[in-house]
Length: 339
Image (cartoon, rainbow, N blue to C red):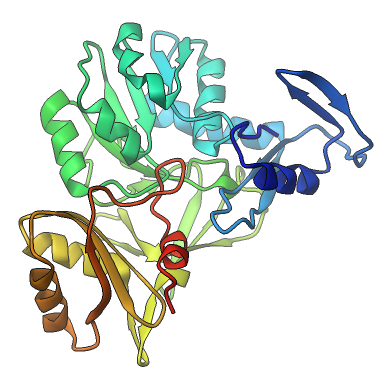
């Protein structure tokens, strides 16, 4: 298992205690202890655990190979590609692409986000990252990019358009989960990249049951169908759209509201609104980026339903995220002490 070395001491202790490790390798050397005896070597991965409660999953070599093959085939990766990794190896997103580049034997380099400005020096042929990182990528210049891939967090529509207009290459929104070793859905490399969708299943089967997104496949940690915890819909082209986490739905005086749907309507109807996030349990809270007035947002929400009067409505310079660039409504609820 690869662990983020920059974790807080409490977070690090939590991960190590729950992994039952036998050997730990760091820059300071190797440490041994008596861990359990587990037959068969596996890669061990853990979810981000925004609230401190990670889930742990293990994958066989065959499962890793299946996911890697799906990535290689989806994006037509070959030994002629050049990869600059900006996603950390302790994150499933970064680790899956690491193994993909190992399989095809292409030129690889790795940079920290702090050094992302040096990425053009290595002339990558494709880039994959979270939207927060891609906001910086759009300010750089590249000569040989084939495509840009976004995953691990929803991409704002304005960023999708901006990257496409600037680089004139496919901008591919994708979706993955640690439970499936990162890669589950993707828009096509060739064909229509439908903004705001995660595309089509890649290496998995998918279905929707009462709006809940279910997946299964040979690369997933279990043989059974699993509930991803996401609400989703399919459009008339078969593309999947994530509607948000089921646990993030607002329940205000007995009426349920989908925060992503509300955000989408706000962004569509208020031209000066650049980004926004809605969160809460039994009340609506909203943070936004843009030049509009708070009263404009409040009036629009109340026009949708009289229960949607914001308890918190703040303009911010940037939407707060958790590493690596994810918007976490549960984190925001903790920060703002939502009911």
